[in-house]
Image 1 (cartoon, rainbow, N blue to C red):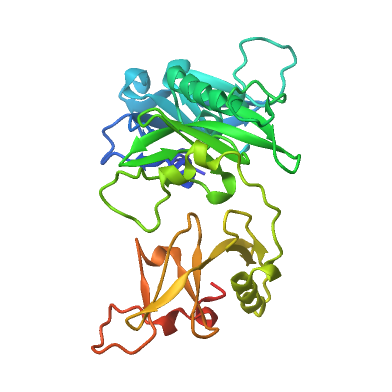
Image 2 (image 1 turned 180 degrees about the vertical axis):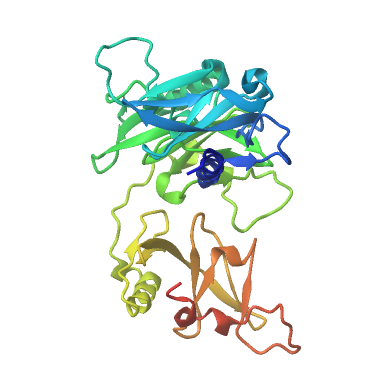
Length: 382
């Protein structure tokens, strides 16, 4: 593949990886800037990033820290200097994206994947620069504040709390739940952005403690309550949103210790049981997602997984209405309260609310969402 085409492909892969992690990314218009993309940190600060292709050779990922152009004298190489804040390096052999601060990069840089023949303290281990381990960036003061507040709050409880013996990450602690099982807790910093507390998990844990310094609030979040991201809205907001997660509901004092309930069988929950039977007619075997309300199923189809949440419904003025109260679901399953008809509504089909017309309207309108169009047997399989 030609180098410029490989560069274009690398750029698209990296942007996709950023978006998959819910990282806000923008691209400049034109080719006059020395950076390829702009990343927005959870704090709102912007970072200019140069995207590079890393090549694996002899156990080391190599990439250049200079730009190249050609003039009458031949090839001209120029360091990026203060024109970029960081480098995003994608290696096709490892299928990983790496984040490197520009201050660490000279004219080139090596990231070691395999152990060297001779140990040295100057090795840049590739695993330490993986995007998932580097993002989001925090200054040391913010990080220490979140850890300090979370650990102090945990010490005031009667739970058995331990540091993680498998690593030196102070943001991971372990506790023994009511079933005497060891659970991991990740301590994260939350940022107040657009009136919501937001955070991005660095690693996978059973639970998260999120500290927002702006509001001086510590939140306790069960990993089963969200997929890739979740946000929380303070109670003093001027608007009410049906799909909001309130800060009070997730406040540490109201939500810790977490309730650890065994996952009940689907057959014991009537709405889920009826939905599972209907989906089973299409050859699928749903499984329940453990959580507070046990109203979400994971359904596999064509090697993809879909989350389907059973929503509370009611009839109002000839329309079927429901509460869209789930984060990270693909479909809402609506059961008609007066018969056994199920409707399936994709999450992207609405913003804050939607209703399905079950009775003929007085005046036809092309913008009406007729319930018949969303019947389960028409919407599934996707």
